[in-house]
Image (cartoon, rainbow, N blue to C red; front, side):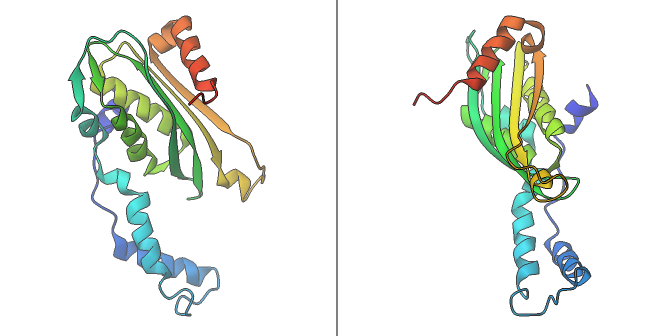
Amino acid sequence: MSTRSADAGTRRPPVDEPRVREAVRTILTGIGENPDREGLRATPDRVGRAWSHLASGYSEDPLATLRGALFEEECNEMVMVREIELYSLCEHHLLPFFGKCHIAYLPAGRIVGLSKLARLVEIYARRLQVQERLTAEIAHALEEALSPHGVGVVIEAQHLCMMMRGVEKQGSVAVTSCMLGAFRDDPKTRAEFMELVGRKHSL
């Protein structure tokens, strides 16, 4: 089993809110603010609660989530969920990045509840991330849980670390992909997936 696969199901304790609150007070002091003034007095508590949500993916097991909704089904066609909203935090600057995730797989006798694909994205996104790793983690977790003929994942996201600081380029979109099995080896399968990713809404 690869390191990536072995790590897919790991879980960590919930966020330590008291330590987060203490750290926020230190940051406020460090930037020259007074953490005891009226507008900031409750900020450490608010941030502590917010981080319990934003980092909740560390205490959840993505493989257990998928395996809890597997069904035996002879389906030979591509299964795809497009435009799954994602919000995550870049581990380099702790600034948000956000966008859409597109997931597809070719079943090999088993399928998974569609909502679990969105849940899988959410679990990994609620950890400190880089977009490249996030894309691969989603794909490899699905491969490990389902053993399908192939998996394809594409993420399109905008990064506030590029928009608010640094190069300050607005509107730029980072695109990452991870293709496994037939999506990597069969050009027709990959082309079909990419065509569906690019298709406009028809609903």
